[in-house]
Image (cartoon, rainbow, N blue to C red; front, side):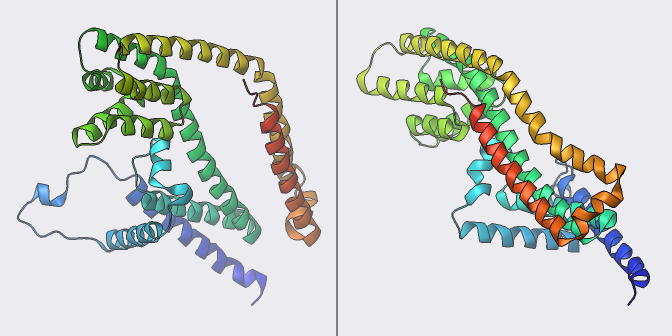
Length: 317
């Protein structure tokens, strides 16, 4: 079959994949969270499940079963909790698969097989980076709330409340993510879990060294006794001084971080601009074996450079 005869078939296949990806995106990702279940709307009516729902549930169950047979890995439930995503790992993987199919379809329509592979790889990397960014933002937000949380706990203890009651008050008065984590501690403690274990899990999940100090201080106080409010005041003062130094370090290293971002983004931006300015010149990189090798070498060198720059602009103190 000639190229002119195969182009309409490839175009129709690409459009079909785009429509399927859009349909799954609307029905799975953008589905309303406020919809009542069918058994609540009509308790006596039989529940009818659509074919698409059956396929989606089957795929999610198959993914979930596969995840449970392994250790969990990067997309474990703990990792999604650290990012603040209220989803199961199978749901995230299914949504990620839909996004990858959609991006691959767009790449196929724009530039054929090479752009399809490139768009799929970029989408996977973007989804992984998106999860890391959510985790980092939530961790930073939680670290900012720790000093105020310690002050509220200390005030609650001085007012005569128990530690668990002070944690409950903190969960009600704080904003996310502190409120979410404190509510989880209260709920776990009410069903019989040890308070120290719940506090330690929060420190590990949020990767907060400051909250880990708080958990250790409370655990030591439970063993040796003493005035917990005074201990919390000293811990809070230490954490505030440490955060002040951290902000100063961030301000002094801001120029280095911006320079690293410019150096990493410049080759990528120039290559994208070259695709539009001089397509015949850029065609060498996307249609020949030496071009593929040069792109692979550039990707490896950029990765190594990104790792090296990340070590240079991350001072220890």
